[in-house]
Length: 520
Image 1 (cartoon, rainbow, N blue to C red):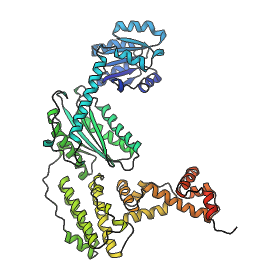
Image 2 (cartoon, one colour; image 1 turned 90 degrees about the horizontal axis):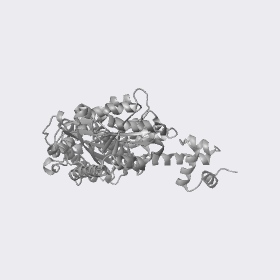
Image 3 (cartoon, helix red, strand yellow; image 1 turned 180 degrees about the horizontal axis):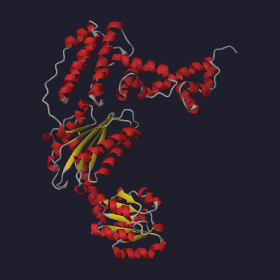
Image 4 (cartoon, rainbow, N blue to C red; image 1 turned 135 degrees about the horizontal axis):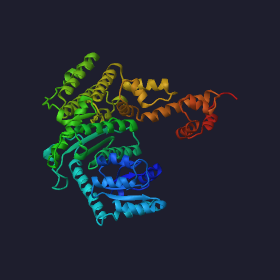
């Protein structure tokens, strides 16, 4: 894309140029802005624009002086003067200084400006089309390497291929792979997340290629980042940008992003770099870090972790809870030390199979807290860290032990504690995060098992519980609607009334009139 720098001392002009034109659709990208020539000159080398849009009359350094200075730095720079009618003579003079075109601000709109920019070169449209096609071809290459494989695939180099010759420049690249769990996001928020990740990466690395996709409630993205020697990009820059991306995503979407970074390489090494980035990303699962770097990893050849059916079964039969917990903890400590995803996968499958077998043997598999979904491996693909998996397995075996000794608990201990917290605090403005913190698990983990065991998600359960309490108050008290709404945790009486009717098919007044059994 053609890189554009905007220089104008009027903020509204700069804002209008940035927001009212779909630059990228026409093959252009705004790389920066400045309020005067002096500011523009200071950032010029770093931004390396192809096109300069500049006003003439500005403080500190006017447009004419700016054009004179930048022409020394970049001989083939295209310059467009943004002129007021009164400055028409200056605009003509600017052409002599090296400006390529000028346009009156009063006549400036998307169609006029884009038409003018495309006349800067007879090949402007062709170049833009070539750039767009090249970008699509690069994205398609990356999609071909990634798609059609299981989400937890190791992406072995032997199963991948290097890009066709000349598709990528012969330069240094780094490959980045990222992941986050998104079960708490709406469909609109997921689209925003995908676009935000791509925009942040492309803003930092103008030559990047990013491909992303969702699998169930997980979001995956892969980027090829080209080093720009003019800004002396290095691994430190990549780490800084990735840390910033993680912070921004956490702030705006409240999800935890994990990122793996490959070693450096040229295009022919892309198959190896994809595998390196995937291995580095998976290392985050064991280290509990948000970023994994391949070139700092110590590769370990771990051995298969043996899991004893006899031990687990006897601990449950004899109600030896402490030894059961310690044994499972020992298994996960071994997995953390080994740090191998295939070995971890094998261990989880064994633990689930043994747990399911014990349930069937003890005739516990019909309990709501031990429904078939509890034994699905899919539950683990959404967990960002091995500590979440350990909590899940410990909870599963503890539920089995509790059911074996005390008979048919409706829910696991974690969910029982969560429901108790809701019962005590439903009138307050509680969230899933509040409940998760109270029961000592992560929000994503609680969200997962809450729906497994209760059959509804947390927000629906909380809303329904509040409505049930409101129904009791409507019948047993003379409180007004807004008072009851506040008492059961609804900040808006109008929203409370809307939800009440959706759940019960009656308005609050209709419900009170129908079910109020107090004497007249």
